[in-house]
Length: 141
Image 1 (cartoon, rainbow, N blue to C red):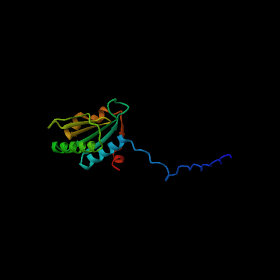
Image 2 (cartoon, one colour):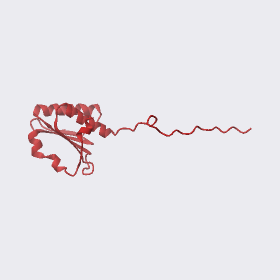
Image 3 (cartoon, rainbow, N blue to C red):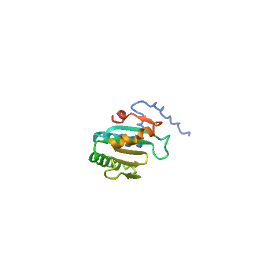
Image 4 (cartoon, rainbow, N blue to C red):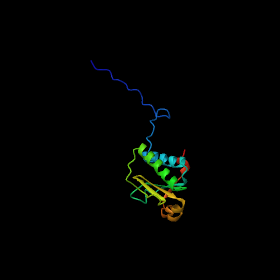
């Protein structure tokens, strides 16, 4: 006796409700969290540059201005909390007390925190004028 052929049900076409959610890019998730944390701590002149095409050492530069040295330290502490909570690999931190500039290298992201005097002095955004600027407003949503 020949076994009966089992007919498989027709495959459903994906719809909005059955489509699997796309995995979010972890770098973009981290970038959003960093920008949101700096904004919540009242960082000024937040700017994000996508430098992946111009740099072999990082994908994004985050630039922010602090109103004072204590504010600069508070921004760095908050930044480190966010990086720790996302288990981001921190390659290094540089910034001496009173220097007015702190750099945190988190591999895909490099964050530069400045006092307003140093932001005006070093004008990092001009060094990377070929980079694509990422709209901070979209990252704050």
